[in-house]
Length: 169
Image (tube, rainbow, N blue to C red):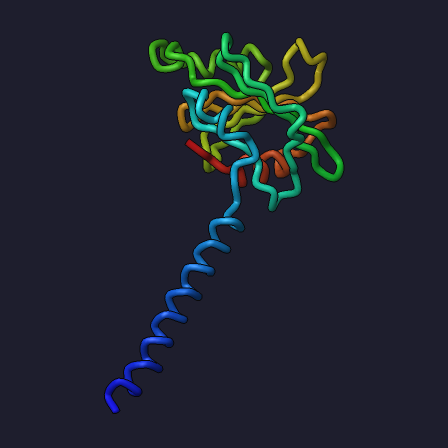
């Protein structure tokens, strides 16, 4: 009689473990993965920062390049009405060695607005090299990032973008 009582419990335990393993496998497959390949991520000496898909920008995989000599990553993210080119590198040591170096850089790039975001300090600029076009510069998490849109973004759109970036180390 004891043997019959233990068999149903045994099957319940085995079933619960099997369901748990299946759920863990499904969660691992469905877990969001950074859109930059693991091979490139291994080469980065800085935190990878990229737009969350939830804000409508998708990284074009064909544009992802890593220049090992310059130690810089570039990629394009496309949204419904704009394309953004991201350039990232490790924050240069001069930013910590020379007081106000970041501020001097953004002034030279003709900054017109700045704000703090969840990933770092952002300056909106209009560099001469872009002939009046917009650019955003962000320094944070050990990463220096430049973002160039193909069409101007409002200050609110820039804030939304930078406050919804993902960081992968």
